[in-house]
Image (cartoon, rainbow, N blue to C red; front, side, top):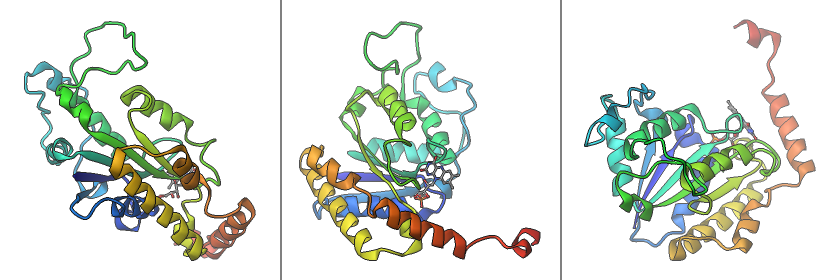
Length: 242
Ligand SMILES: Cc1cc2nc3c(=O)[nH]c(=O)nc-3n(C[C@H](O)[C@H](O)[C@H](O)COP(=O)(O)O)c2cc1C
């Protein structure tokens, strides 16, 4: 099985989220190949909106940058894992730039009204539907329910409900503080087990979702650690001037 991890955190290797994605892939069988692309290390120009890809038979994009390599990697992968932090209730900018440039993978919109739950266009290559998509995202908030609805609605519209798997981690900044190491290890172990389960049937049970949605720390512990963390790194007047 070929996994492609698209890392959409500007922190690249230091990303909280990539630690979760890494644990998830570790759960896959040994003969799995894992390719990771750090999107912020790549030159991905914004879509120009010229629709050249829709006007050509090949669907080729006119922009000459690293996106062609990313499209090839997407085409080669069996499972695509998008790993990124929640930014203002959505995806970080480089991830959005990459998503917009995927316009070349879909057919032109011909003005018809859709009767399915997604208004999204047909894929140029229908066999792409066989690929599996996993979203792994961490956020700073103490729970995921209040902060992810907009992003999940976007995925529902693009992929159709139930056509992707979302692993959402609250209290993501705990990884930065280095505190509560035992709880971090327990959480990552549950994610590893989730990876093994996903590898066997491309889905996760309700019980697994429940396990990996439980915050690593109680709201009180999380808030105590978070306050101490920001206080340690607080701006002084001198920091502001320099
Ligand atoms: C620009 C910016 C916007 C953010 N917006 C949100 C947000 O809307 N909701 C939230 O819970 N956390 C938000 N966060 C916190 C990150 O999602 C969180 O720190 C995450 O764990 C970082 O993951 P990473 O290390 O993989 O980049 C934001 C962080 C930044 C830098």
